[in-house]
Amino acid sequence: MKLPENISNQIKNDPLSQIVKDNYENNCEFQQLIEKMIIQKFDFNKLEKFKNIIIEYFQTYSLCQQKNELKCKQNIEGYRLYLKFQQNRLFLFLKKCIHKKNSQSILNNYLHCDFPKKWIKSDLKKQVADLDQKDRGILINYFMSILNPTNELKKKWLFLNGSIGAGKTFLSVFFANTFISKTDKKVIFINANNLFTFFRKYTFDKTELIREFYLNLHNVNLLIIDDLGNENRLIAFRDEFLFSLINKRYFRGLLTFFISNLSYSNLKSFYTFSNDKIETTKTKSFFNLFDKNCHFITLNNIFKNKMIK
Image (tube, rainbow, N blue to C red; front, side):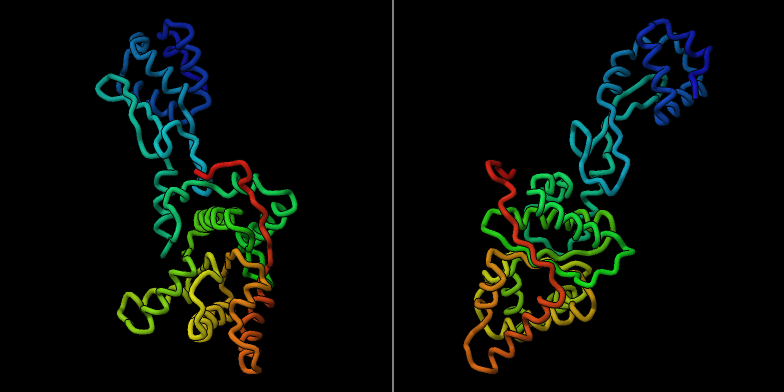
C-alpha cells in the first residue's frame, strides 16, 4: 500500500519523505500509525519536528515475530522500540518483545531445573553450529525427530556422555528450551546428586509436595538426568527408585535423557555392586532398558578455546 499522495506532498523534507514512503509500504505497524495520525487530522507539514525520532526508530527497528525462535534480535534483549502517536506528538518507548514473554513461559514449563536461569535465553541452532560435523548430524537428526510430532521413534531416550566440560549439560539445556518453545510441554532437568537427595527425602517424608514431585518425575514429558553416575552409590537407590522410575517411563513411552561423564561400560560398573548371580541379573535388567531405548552419543568438547558465558 502506497502513502496517500496528499500526505506525501505535505512532507517537505525529501529524505524524511522517502523514509516515510518506504516504511509505509513495507511496515504494517508504521502504516497503522500513519492512518491513526490521518484520522486525528495531524498536520504532516509538522512531521519534520519529529524527524530524529522517526530516523532513530527505523535505525533500530527489528521485529521478533516467531514464538519458537529463542534468539532475540533487539538491541536491548527482550525489549523493542515502539513509535507512538499521542496528543499530536510522536514518542519512542520500550515495550517487551515476544522473547521477553517467551523466556518466562519457557521457564514456567520447567517443573525443576538445575542450571543457570540465563541459559533459558539461548537457542539450539547457535550451539549445534559449534559441534563437529558428525556429532552435529547425529544430534540434529535425533532432536528434530523428537520435535516432529508425526514421527514415531522406536528409541526415545538419549545417553549423552563425554569428558567434563565437553558441553553436554549446556547443549541439553538448549534442546530442552527448544522442546518447550515448540511443543509447550513440561520438562524436569535434574542433577543425579539432587535426584539421590530427593530419594532420601521420599523414603522418610511423603508430604504432599514430595509426592507431587515424585509423580512429576514419572509423568513429565521430558526428564533429563544430568551427571548420572556421580551420585552416592546405593543399591536401594538403584533398585527401589532409579530402576522403578526409568522402567515406568519406558512403558509410558516418555522422553528421557541421561547425561554422564562416564562411558556406558563404566556406568555399568558403577551400578554393579557385586559379581553374584542375583546382582548380575538385577544389573542386566536395569541396563536392558537403556539398550532397548537409548541412542548413544559421545560428545567431544564443543567449547574448545571458548569461554562459556
